[in-house]
Image 1 (cartoon, one colour):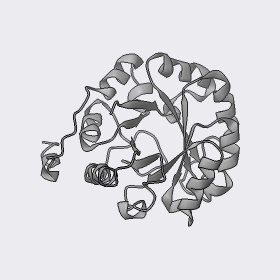
Image 2: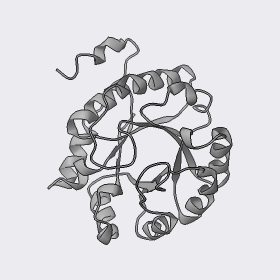
Image 3: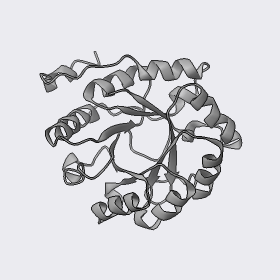
Image 4: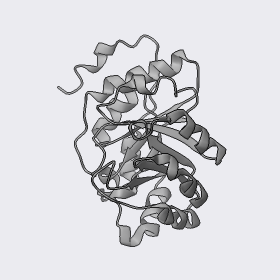
Length: 234
């Protein structure tokens, strides 16, 4: 599967958001990752549906909205109406994840389900067939610029096999500490949608940064052994 790059506007200059979005989409990014934080599910507060609505007016890119909020079911409609293409909510933030997926689909958006690093894959096993995307957080959400948590590679790999065994279509997105180096690990583990913030917005040459993170096409073979991933950080 071709790799999709989703620059996170969390690392952009909020005073010039339209220019910052144009910069990354002109440089080849397919998605624009919008980090919505409520100050409750995560410590910080970022932006709401009004900003998504403004972004919708200036870009044709896929607006990949990541809701790091409590009670996401109360927020979905306003983000769908604002023009989100994909709405991802956290499985930890709602009691009725399946119903939230249905609601997102009813509003005409693609549905993503996000997992924090400490959350088991078993929480989404029953959701994979209905979701369009599963987002594996490779940092604890709430702040930009954090270090990649390597223990999540095994989780990505297990999810890749889970999706394959169910013979269903479901993107695997990763978010947190993604750069030229870590992108290789997550792509080898099976992820195909990569969120990157500071590695893209902090780069002198944005197009080159996107190209490096996208990397070369990786062929996934069925004879992967999980121990292949263990010596990667030496």
